[in-house]
Amino acid sequence: MKSLRAPLQLLTCEAARPLASAVAAQLGLGLSKSSDQWFASGEGKHVIAENVRGSDVYVFGAPIAPGDERSVYDRFIMTLHAVEAATQSDAEWVTAVLPYYPGARQDKRKGRTREAISAGLFARMLQEAGARRVVTVDIHNEAIAGMFDPTRCRLENVELCHRFARHLRWRGLAGGTVAAPDVGGLERARHFAAELSADLVAISKERDYSQANTVQRATLIGEVEGRDVLLVDDIIDTAGSVVAAVSALRERGALNITVACSHALMSPPAWERLGALHARSVAEGWRFRVVGSTSVVHPNPPDWFGAFDIAPLLAEVINSINGRGSVTGAQEADEALSGGGDPHSGCA
Image 1 (cartoon, rainbow, N blue to C red):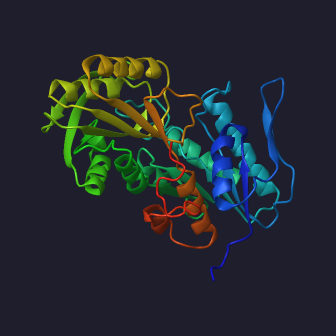
Image 2: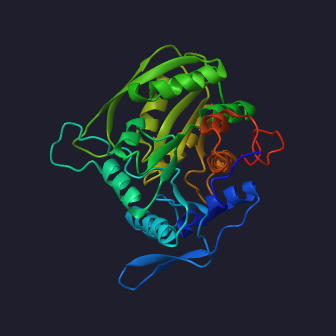
Image 3: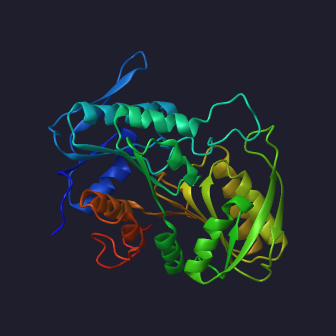
């Protein structure tokens, strides 16, 4: 019989409610009553409406929330309010659940000396608010774990590869070749290729760092002619990299192309760019699809976009932490808590 750290309770900020509700359902729990409150001045607070004293509390936040009028920083600060509210309410353990870690690409200065390292700043803010652990998904740079003081707060990075790859195979979108959109993403693509027993190619991209989200040129390293390709990335932001990568793959003879990403941020003009790629694929007679995890929930996406539901995996991770079990074992297991043995349960 497992030894629980403390009674389990889930709280959520409003922006994260869709995912938090799905995780709670997987665990057979309800969300504890709490709410975001905003004032006319733009200030806010998070109020917990029931007892959490002595509990193992998981606070869900969503820095990226399409359709929400508030900014990334508003939503992150509200997550801090919720974490501190749980801490001040004498919860035994407080864990922040941020599937998309904000500022993860701001993890170093990249040759410029007068700028902040925001990934570290956000780490310090989370631990100052009272988080003992932060659960995130496929973080951009695992070295961010070292930005937390391990005596106060630890980062738990949950990897999607095992289940995500199986989901793509089940949907017939895996293809026989996996491509990395850049050299930095090669290790991630290598893991997918191993899971799918597929070949591996890479794309070398040259960025213009004087302009935000700008890719100047993409060069393919490897052979894709006559093959279906799975292009694997961690983040789609404005989709400039995706467009350049897909164009490079098609120029070298790739057939159908699926783009799989952990975090589909879809900042403007991503939908327009990807929609144009889909229209091109229809006109030219090849298949183009994008699949993103529910770390970011998009209401009413187009039919060429699919969602990979991470709620079953997050539920297992939380259950393992609460029961002092293995997080690695949870993310590598093939069965969801309430998935009845179907690894694709809950996947759109």
